[in-house]
Amino acid sequence: MTDVLDDAGAPAAHRPPTVSTGGLSVIGYVDERSIHAVSGWIWLPDDPHAQPAFEVVLPMPDGSTQVLVRGVATNPTPHLQSQGVGNGKNGFSVVLPRLLTPEERDRVEVRADRSPWPLPMSPWLKTEYQPIGYVAMDIVNNCNIRCPFCVYDYKDTKNTKFMTDDTFETVLRIMPYTADGCFWLSCLHEPTMHPKLLEFIQRVPPELRRKLMFTSNITKRLPESFFDGLARSGMDHINISFESNQPDVYMKMRKGARYDIFKENRAKLVAAFAAAQAEGIKIPKLRYIMLAYKSNAEELPELAASLAEEPTTFAVQIRDTMPVPHIPKDFVESEFLDRPGWERLYQRVKPLLKGKVTLFLTPAYLEGKEDAVLLEDSEPVTAPPPPAAKLAPGIHQTVNLRIEWDGTLEVQGTDVHFQDPAWHLRLVKTKVQFLRDPLQFLTAL
Image 1 (cartoon, helix red, strand yellow):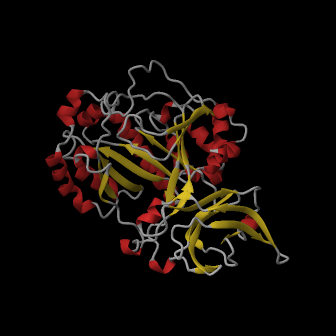
Image 2 (cartoon, one colour):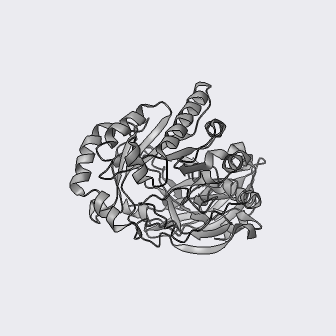
Image 3 (tube, one colour):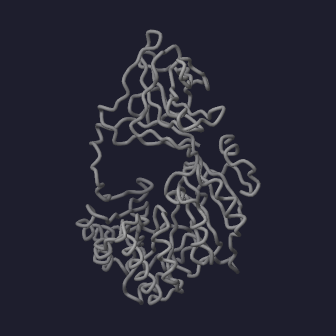
């Protein structure tokens, strides 16, 4: 249930200063300081196997100090240990006994036992309590097309069911505790099938819409007003599935879709996003997701380059298929790229990889060496420091949530293995409607 908040890219100059506590040196960071919780890590280099005691304190205006929480840093920190820091259990994550005001939050300090000096704040300090890594939600239970490579097996899906207004309102209570861009309005199914998709987005408080995203095939005919609403929604990002500009190849991959409708919708999407962009509106990051097969491999480099040139495009991702058992054997044999095929595609795409284009490969390519590989990622706007300058990350306890159209909620651990049919460590299953106090539920986990 632990998730590492990566302080990746921290330069050596940001290594926490060493302070003294009862004659012992102390190194550590506060990684999160929110109105709800505090987390970070502590290490005593003079006593490297110790699990240090600490206290969370609130300095008062009159000069006195209020102790909020006392504890011992025992959370797993394997990433710290791998870099020679600590014994693998030097993290802490505590929920505060009461909600703080923002002003109080900014005064809170964490001190190692017997030390008058507070731990420094991480250069990447989190100020929001986000115990949820992501919410993988679906507002429907179906898709309007039947792609042969789909990760979901629709053979038993006979009709379409929609999330109700009341269920969505209940779900909104969880949104503040989710990281930005990590509240999914679609996971396995097609969200545009829901007649209230745009209305649901607009019912989210504006300050929380930065947490939203969804993935769509946009093959259902949609009005210009829908795309205009998306462009001005304040969402974090939108993924669009797009395999080919050749109608016959496109409709082979997106079985049941009409290429002309997709093309029409994409034109409306780009026009709406461009218009909003011209007005100075911060549009959602628009990402195109392309799966590579024998039928479209020759076309993908040129198509990816063309999409990357569009001002409204944030990223283009070319991916391998998630190898689930129900994909038809004849499709696997006729369409899956072999290793030489991936090598050829990589060489042709390689010149694009320093821009908006990214190529992801899975174990089908790596022959089981790793879970996945990013051959070469998009070059960031600000280049990170070299790996040797990275500082070991801190620790934060997080879970992931899966929410279905009817409010069925499953709490899942963060140790996800996407190639395994049993994708997640399942911890708790209930109904989101049963959560009388979502914050209390999350902190109890």
